[in-house]
Length: 609
Image 1 (cartoon, helix red, strand yellow):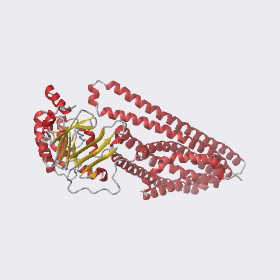
Image 2 (cartoon, rainbow, N blue to C red):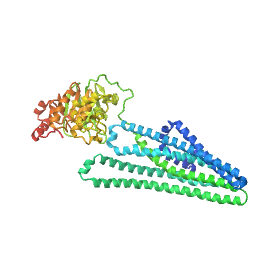
Image 3 (tube, rainbow, N blue to C red):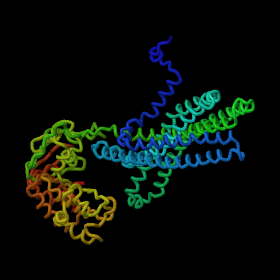
Image 4 (cartoon, rainbow, N blue to C red):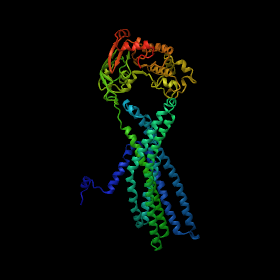
């Protein structure tokens, strides 16, 4: 006798074992989704019960047909025929109710599973750190969040419903075929491996091609999203035609990839149906010979043929569903890739409680940092800087000197390679990032405005803000007057990214948002760069009031901000090259002096690029 373990070690597996392995490999990407379905056990039980009733009702129809044929259609058998027809109506009613119940519960399960999955996927995406989004394309992520989850909805909904229905029908028909005629049933069963094995073998190829099609579609979606978000730039540069052609090429690539998967599915389905129904014809011929020889009644043969047709049609439909399931497995694999990405910026197991209140003392201690996309280029090189509570400092330096990077590290969008960033004497990595960021308000140079109302944009992140607080923050940021000139005032819905607002209006909304946050640390990244001289003067007055009593770090863009800073920090190539007041640095004839002279001599409004 052969030792099974020996076969396993030598890799000499039976065809059945290889088929089972391929089956498991094809469906393995769907396994992590099983817990989503198991949350709704009642729905599953109801769907399964309805499936069993519907399958049982269908399987009783051939019995009625056999009875009618064997009794014959004569006046003497009219009562029996009427009874059979009455029974068939009852069976049809039962089948209709059970099928509707099955459809409702199975589709509900599919919708519910996909809704939960989309929520968890989005929740996971927003938990990932900045380094992930430095390389990921938003359009592709949206494709996985929408298109790929729609594939899964079909797998858990309609495809699952059809698969389960036909599986029960197939098993029931096989049992009834064996009970009707074991000899003929054996011939039909012999054809099943010829259908099932190629079906399973093709699964991995279909999944691979389906995934490639989904990747191509995601690429096209990403390209479209990128260009639609910058449609004015595209039109201003006359790039509509080239953009349309590139999108068309991307769509065609997605189409060709989908066609490859479709061709494989069509060939597999055609082969399965041909083999199954050819075997039925052969069995029907053999059964006819038995009827002619008196070994089987006409009704019994009709019963067997009906069960064979039910089994064949069920197997044929399962072959089509198998292709849909393999496509869904490809989508599940793409989703699993995202869910497997672990954020690097996370809260420690036992985070340090946030101080109450925060003092706002900031310290960068021998910090070295490179962005993950350029690990060999040091952006900050052994930088040390301390900002005392309530102090107001300005960061000055050429583009790429590391000013904005300091903000990103303080907000813990990235972790330092070496050294420490401390807030109130504690390494910020020991805080929960949510608590840390509540202590910091940011007004960036290019603020993000959401497609919400003005009030919702100002109170973004401040769930407890009431209308009075929102208006007060807008007044302090000199934004109230232009807001009231909008059609619905604070309830005006803004376009995506605030496209209908001017740059200065967007900046004033961002400053309003920072004022409303009322955080002990205020970061201003050239927050008034888009304002005209009159509005800047008004906003600067508001910022003086806001910065009072807060630790403030300003990336200096205009001289007015620099003049009022307690200290000016001059950065170049990731190191601090100068430090002092405007007067002392102007007299030192260093980098700051050259930048200041450039501004005065050329009349440019900006101190740095």
